[in-house]
Each structure stands twice: as structure tokens, then as C-alpha cells.
Amino acid sequence: MDNAAIGFFDSGWGGLSIMKAAREVLPHEDFVYVADCGHAPYGDQSHEFIVERARAITDFLIHKQRVKAIVIACNTATAEAANKLRALYPNFPIIGVEPAIKPAVEQSQTKVVGMISTTRTATSVRYQELLARWAGPVQVISTGCPGLMECVERGELDTPDTLALLHHYLDPMIAARIDGLVLGCTHYPFLADTIDSITQGKIRLYEPGLAVARHLQNRLASLDALTTKKTSGEEIFYVSNLTEARKAVAEHLMPGISHFNALPEETA
Ligand code: DGL
Image 1 (cartoon, rainbow, N blue to C red):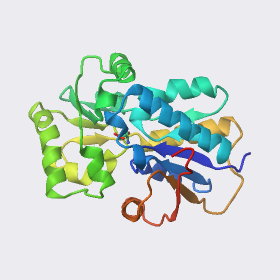
Image 2 (cartoon, rainbow, N blue to C red):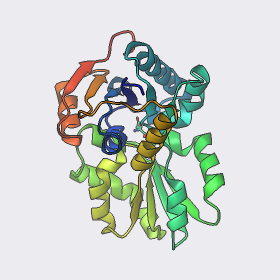
Image 3 (cartoon, protein in one colour):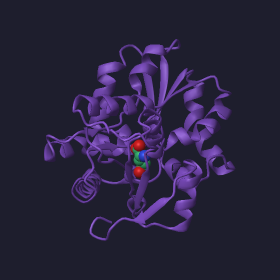
Image 4 (cartoon, rainbow, N blue to C red):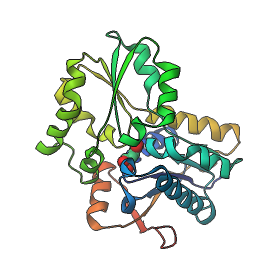
């Protein structure tokens, strides 16, 4: 047993979609979440930049926050930096997030599925490997979606501009008769209702939150590192470039959260 907290990080608030699922599965664990809003979006950055941010945040979580495991609650950072982080911390549990290609492919009737993500994820080697492994005869239409994570970061989940941007990315996929849509960025589950309004709920959405949360639980159990606490777990947040507006968006996306701090200077 280990009563230390679990660390999460993302370029902003998207990783809350993963943390919410983890909260369901692990109600007694404490969480420390780093939102790297000051360096977002990762999806438009270079490989080197993303690796450097992921390394700095991981160092902060391990050495300053003393977490017992880290969830990279970001597809882009997983694709670009997970291997590097695991090489730096070989004995430390680091759990990544990957687009849910496998279930979408397995359940497709039309044999065409869509995947939306950041440009960096869509063009990553890791994503190509995922496709090679799971796509088989199914056509996977993927598109990078610049601008979409920013809609979530601004808390604009269903404004006319967000709707227009979603139409821009999704209409060609709908015309190609996709029957599943992989949400390959942790920000996008917050747009699920708006996406459903465009597809009239006819296209199944795939997000990895629950699978990641269960994987985390199993990993901690196998290390005998689950908490012994019986009280409700707490969440604490460290944010680069913390503003009142950013707090308000986070509170909207995950009602009830409160403990916001500025990420210390040396990490921010
Ligand atoms: N939430 C992120 C992801 O899952 C990244 C968004 C961004 O910073 O571009 O890919």
C-alpha cells in the first residue's frame, strides 16, 4: 500500500476527461494535476518542445509532489514523450493515453471510422504503429484539428464558432459513412454532446478514459500501491499561467474542484 497521490498532466484541461474516469474507479486516491496552459497547445509544437515540457512536469510530480504514479493525460504527450519518460524513470509507473482505434475498428459495420486528434498525434509514429496493428481492412480517416482544443480551453463547448469548426472537420467523415469516431485528444470528450448534435447521435464516439483508469488501477494493484484511505480522495491543481478565467473553465468542466496553484517558477 502507498497513500501518496497519483500525478496527471496535460497541456490544459483536457486531461480532466481522464481524471474524471479515474475518480470513478479510484474514489479514495488523491490526485495532483498539472495543467500546462502556459505552453498549450502541444499539438502545434515540435517533438523536442513536448518532450522537454513532459520531462519538466514529470520531474516536478516525482521529486516535488512525490506522486506514486503518473498518468500522461494527453495523447500528444504520450505519442511524443512516453518512451523518453519511461527511459528516464524505468521503475516508475507511467501510464499513457492512446486513441481507442481498436474498439472502433472492431465494432465498425461500415468499415470506415474517423479519428480526430491534434496534428502532432495524427502525424506521429506511434499513431502509425497503432493503425498498422489494429486497422486491418477498416479504413481509418484521421484528421488533425487545429483550434479545437482551444475551444475547450475557452469553455466554448457549443458556441456557433465551435460548431462550425466541428462541422469543418467532421462533415467529410460523415460523408464517407464513418460509423465510429475516435476522440484522439483528451479535450474532445468535452465536445461529445456537440458532436452528437451534428451526427444526430448516429456515430459512436470512442474515448479511452475508463480503459486508462482501469489500467491505472490494475497497475497500482500489481505494485501493491493502492491507498488504504477510506475517505474521499482530493484533487490539487498546478497550472502554468494560471488566470481566473482558466479556473472558471476548469470548474465548469469538472464541478466541485477548487485547489488551484500556480506551477512553481522553475517548472513553469
Ligand atoms: N489534450 C491533448 C491531447 O490529448 C493535447 C491538446 C494540445 O495541447 O494540443 O492530445
